[in-house]
Image (cartoon, rainbow, N blue to C red; front, side, top):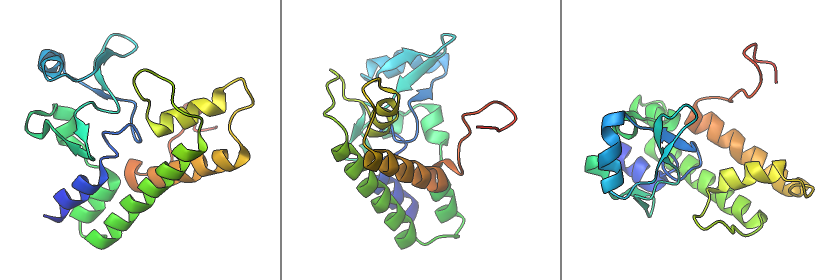
Length: 169
């Protein structure tokens, strides 16, 4: 019961906060398209669902019983901590609420989304850092970094490395 309560309050694995795409098996593509999911080809041609998933409504999957295998298999670090009894449901829900509060504040600090299909907040914030117009304000950049750190710690399982294989940034 508590695991489903966590997921129903969260939705970060589907809203683009954690991933830009979810890989699909080739045999899942036709079904995903029939269900109206946004299937794209990754570099190299592998099929994947673009995030924010079009099946996500009010932080819940509307196609839960028919979701792809990778969606079924995923458990974020917070989910695993709760499942293992290392955090309580109240502690886990507080982390989820903090993540949503940071994402909401970050979204308010960004220019309006002008894409035809709305882009996830974290994606917009990361691209704002790369823009040629001076990028985000120092406050917005710091907020993105705090949000990224919280997502890395509680959902990804630790900081991600963007440097070379040696781990150097």
